Length: 195
Image (cartoon, rainbow, N blue to C red):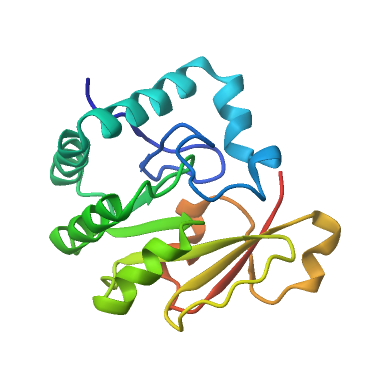
Protein backbone atom coordinates (compact mmCIF):
# COMPACT_ATOMS: atom_id res chain seq x y z
CA UNK A 1 0.00 0.00 0.00
CA UNK A 2 1.28 3.44 -0.99
CA UNK A 3 -0.13 6.90 -0.38
CA UNK A 4 -2.21 8.30 -3.27
CA UNK A 5 -1.38 11.85 -4.26
CA UNK A 6 -3.93 13.67 -6.44
CA UNK A 7 -2.56 15.71 -9.31
CA UNK A 8 -5.29 18.33 -8.98
CA UNK A 9 -8.95 18.89 -9.75
CA UNK A 10 -11.18 21.38 -11.56
CA UNK A 11 -11.27 23.85 -8.66
CA UNK A 12 -7.62 23.65 -7.63
CA UNK A 13 -6.04 23.23 -11.03
CA UNK A 14 -2.81 21.24 -11.21
CA UNK A 15 -1.88 21.39 -7.54
CA UNK A 16 -0.96 18.09 -5.88
CA UNK A 17 -2.78 17.11 -2.71
CA UNK A 18 -3.25 14.27 -0.27
CA UNK A 19 -6.71 13.50 1.13
CA UNK A 20 -8.39 11.20 3.61
CA UNK A 21 -11.88 9.71 3.84
CA UNK A 22 -14.37 12.49 4.59
CA UNK A 23 -16.17 12.77 7.92
CA UNK A 24 -14.57 9.75 9.63
CA UNK A 25 -11.17 11.46 9.40
CA UNK A 26 -12.61 14.81 10.51
CA UNK A 27 -12.62 15.12 14.28
CA UNK A 28 -14.56 18.37 14.46
CA UNK A 29 -17.08 18.35 11.63
CA UNK A 30 -20.42 18.41 13.44
CA UNK A 31 -21.38 21.70 11.76
CA UNK A 32 -20.53 20.69 8.21
CA UNK A 33 -20.93 16.90 7.90
CA UNK A 34 -24.39 17.13 6.33
CA UNK A 35 -23.26 19.60 3.65
CA UNK A 36 -19.74 18.20 3.19
CA UNK A 37 -18.51 19.10 -0.31
CA UNK A 38 -15.83 16.37 -0.22
CA UNK A 39 -18.47 13.72 0.44
CA UNK A 40 -20.05 14.44 -2.96
CA UNK A 41 -16.91 13.55 -4.94
CA UNK A 42 -16.19 10.67 -2.58
CA UNK A 43 -19.58 9.10 -3.31
CA UNK A 44 -19.69 10.03 -7.01
CA UNK A 45 -16.26 8.83 -8.16
CA UNK A 46 -15.14 5.29 -7.24
CA UNK A 47 -11.49 6.11 -7.98
CA UNK A 48 -11.60 9.10 -5.62
CA UNK A 49 -13.26 7.04 -2.88
CA UNK A 50 -10.62 4.31 -3.27
CA UNK A 51 -7.76 6.84 -3.02
CA UNK A 52 -9.16 8.61 0.05
CA UNK A 53 -9.91 5.30 1.80
CA UNK A 54 -6.46 3.97 0.88
CA UNK A 55 -4.79 7.00 2.48
CA UNK A 56 -6.94 6.83 5.61
CA UNK A 57 -6.22 3.13 6.02
CA UNK A 58 -2.49 3.68 5.46
CA UNK A 59 -2.12 6.54 7.95
CA UNK A 60 -4.09 4.72 10.66
CA UNK A 61 -2.18 1.45 10.15
CA UNK A 62 1.28 2.84 9.36
CA UNK A 63 1.60 6.53 10.16
CA UNK A 64 5.34 6.50 9.43
CA UNK A 65 4.97 5.06 5.91
CA UNK A 66 2.20 7.53 5.04
CA UNK A 67 4.47 10.50 5.75
CA UNK A 68 7.53 8.84 4.19
CA UNK A 69 5.53 8.33 0.98
CA UNK A 70 4.58 12.03 0.97
CA UNK A 71 8.22 13.01 1.48
CA UNK A 72 9.26 10.71 -1.35
CA UNK A 73 6.76 12.44 -3.65
CA UNK A 74 7.95 15.90 -2.59
CA UNK A 75 11.60 14.96 -3.10
CA UNK A 76 10.95 13.66 -6.61
CA UNK A 77 8.45 16.23 -7.89
CA UNK A 78 9.50 19.35 -5.96
CA UNK A 79 6.09 21.04 -6.37
CA UNK A 80 5.71 24.78 -5.84
CA UNK A 81 2.44 24.14 -3.97
CA UNK A 82 1.04 21.18 -2.04
CA UNK A 83 -2.40 20.93 -0.42
CA UNK A 84 -3.22 18.91 2.67
CA UNK A 85 -6.75 17.48 2.70
CA UNK A 86 -9.10 18.35 -0.10
CA UNK A 87 -11.03 15.78 1.93
CA UNK A 88 -10.34 14.93 5.55
CA UNK A 89 -8.50 16.78 8.27
CA UNK A 90 -5.58 16.69 10.70
CA UNK A 91 -6.05 13.47 12.64
CA UNK A 92 -4.15 14.22 15.85
CA UNK A 93 -1.18 16.13 17.29
CA UNK A 94 1.36 13.64 15.94
CA UNK A 95 -0.09 14.07 12.45
CA UNK A 96 0.18 17.86 12.68
CA UNK A 97 3.72 17.65 14.05
CA UNK A 98 4.69 15.65 10.96
CA UNK A 99 3.02 18.21 8.67
CA UNK A 100 5.17 20.89 10.31
CA UNK A 101 8.30 18.76 9.99
CA UNK A 102 7.64 18.23 6.29
CA UNK A 103 7.21 21.98 5.76
CA UNK A 104 10.57 22.52 7.48
CA UNK A 105 12.24 19.84 5.34
CA UNK A 106 10.83 21.24 2.06
CA UNK A 107 11.13 25.03 2.40
CA UNK A 108 10.76 25.64 -1.36
CA UNK A 109 7.24 24.14 -1.38
CA UNK A 110 4.31 26.15 -0.02
CA UNK A 111 1.83 23.97 1.87
CA UNK A 112 -1.83 24.75 2.49
CA UNK A 113 -4.24 23.26 4.99
CA UNK A 114 -7.82 24.20 5.83
CA UNK A 115 -8.74 22.72 9.19
CA UNK A 116 -11.39 22.52 11.86
CA UNK A 117 -8.93 20.95 14.30
CA UNK A 118 -8.43 24.31 16.00
CA UNK A 119 -7.13 23.00 19.33
CA UNK A 120 -4.36 20.92 17.75
CA UNK A 121 -3.03 23.86 15.73
CA UNK A 122 -3.47 26.33 18.61
CA UNK A 123 -1.67 24.08 21.09
CA UNK A 124 1.26 23.68 18.72
CA UNK A 125 1.32 27.39 17.94
CA UNK A 126 1.56 28.26 21.66
CA UNK A 127 4.80 26.32 22.03
CA UNK A 128 6.49 26.46 18.64
CA UNK A 129 6.35 28.42 15.40
CA UNK A 130 4.49 27.15 12.40
CA UNK A 131 6.82 27.44 9.39
CA UNK A 132 6.12 30.34 7.02
CA UNK A 133 5.63 27.94 4.11
CA UNK A 134 2.79 26.09 5.91
CA UNK A 135 -0.36 28.17 5.46
CA UNK A 136 -3.07 27.21 7.94
CA UNK A 137 -6.65 28.45 7.58
CA UNK A 138 -9.20 27.76 10.28
CA UNK A 139 -12.35 26.65 8.44
CA UNK A 140 -15.54 28.28 9.68
CA UNK A 141 -19.07 27.49 8.62
CA UNK A 142 -21.42 30.36 7.79
CA UNK A 143 -21.81 32.50 10.95
CA UNK A 144 -19.65 30.30 13.19
CA UNK A 145 -17.54 32.33 15.61
CA UNK A 146 -14.01 31.42 16.61
CA UNK A 147 -11.26 33.60 18.03
CA UNK A 148 -7.97 32.71 16.37
CA UNK A 149 -4.44 33.62 17.22
CA UNK A 150 -3.09 36.56 15.25
CA UNK A 151 -1.08 34.50 12.76
CA UNK A 152 -3.83 32.02 11.85
CA UNK A 153 -5.96 32.78 8.82
CA UNK A 154 -9.71 32.21 8.45
CA UNK A 155 -11.63 30.49 5.63
CA UNK A 156 -15.40 30.77 5.75
CA UNK A 157 -17.93 28.79 3.68
CA UNK A 158 -21.15 30.69 3.05
CA UNK A 159 -24.24 30.53 0.88
CA UNK A 160 -24.03 32.48 -2.39
CA UNK A 161 -26.64 35.04 -1.33
CA UNK A 162 -24.58 35.83 1.81
CA UNK A 163 -21.18 36.41 0.16
CA UNK A 164 -21.56 40.19 0.48
CA UNK A 165 -21.84 39.98 4.29
CA UNK A 166 -18.24 38.93 4.87
CA UNK A 167 -14.89 40.68 4.61
CA UNK A 168 -12.07 38.83 2.90
CA UNK A 169 -10.81 37.56 -0.42
CA UNK A 170 -13.66 35.96 -2.39
CA UNK A 171 -12.45 32.71 -3.96
CA UNK A 172 -13.01 32.55 -7.72
CA UNK A 173 -11.73 28.97 -8.12
CA UNK A 174 -8.62 27.54 -9.80
CA UNK A 175 -5.90 27.76 -7.16
CA UNK A 176 -3.09 27.17 -9.65
CA UNK A 177 -3.99 30.42 -11.45
CA UNK A 178 -4.66 32.44 -8.29
CA UNK A 179 -2.45 31.11 -5.48
CA UNK A 180 -3.93 33.53 -2.92
CA UNK A 181 -4.26 30.99 -0.10
CA UNK A 182 -0.74 29.65 -0.66
CA UNK A 183 0.74 33.14 -0.65
CA UNK A 184 -1.53 34.89 1.87
CA UNK A 185 -0.08 36.66 4.86
CA UNK A 186 -0.91 35.16 8.26
CA UNK A 187 -4.21 36.50 9.57
CA UNK A 188 -5.81 36.63 6.13
CA UNK A 189 -9.44 35.85 5.40
CA UNK A 190 -10.89 34.00 2.43
CA UNK A 191 -14.57 33.43 1.63
CA UNK A 192 -15.82 30.35 -0.23
CA UNK A 193 -19.21 29.91 -1.79
CA UNK A 194 -20.79 26.65 -0.65
CA UNK A 195 -21.14 24.13 -3.44
